[in-house]
View 1 (cartoon, rainbow, N blue to C red):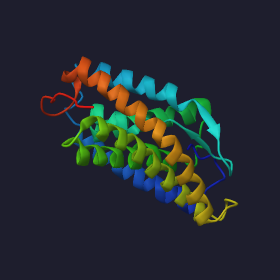
View 2: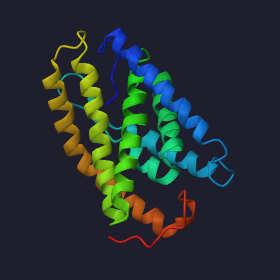
View 3: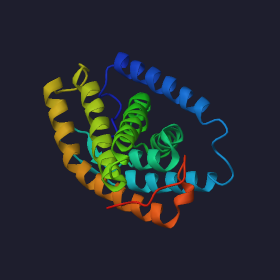
View 4: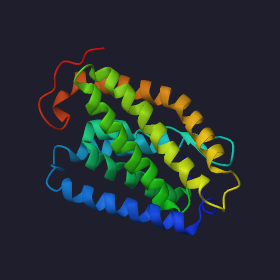
Length: 213
């Protein structure tokens, strides 16, 4: 899902950067005081895991790529605001150090993976968690990454610099990540179940209920 430089028009990249910076600024204000000494190691572990998972890419038609993101899991475990900042940090380091995604379009990549996926995934989780938290985690991973991919498809489709039109980019990115999302959703649910059983105390908010599968 990392968009390379040259694939987006400059105005699209600029709008995405403004949206990403605005959202992350809001997230920074909301997490003020939440990052305690007890939660800092959890943030580091989640960031390291996401970094490793996102380095596994495979190409999809049009020159972009599909890969695991883990934004929904970060949101569930850390809360949506700290989760967004965590994923944004990972995506930025990948671009600066490893060239995974362009620098000019860094705002777009952060918007798709650290904003859209994280907040959509968390919204899905909260919507379904009252019925079944295992299913909620699966749905969050599946629909979160699909939403991020559709955002990328929209950005590519409206850019004259990209070779394909909007319908094509939305179809390719949406269909590709709907399939990938099934796997990401399953991994999110399984890891969530394990962490919830082993360390329910690290989840934000109220004490956890027993997780039902």
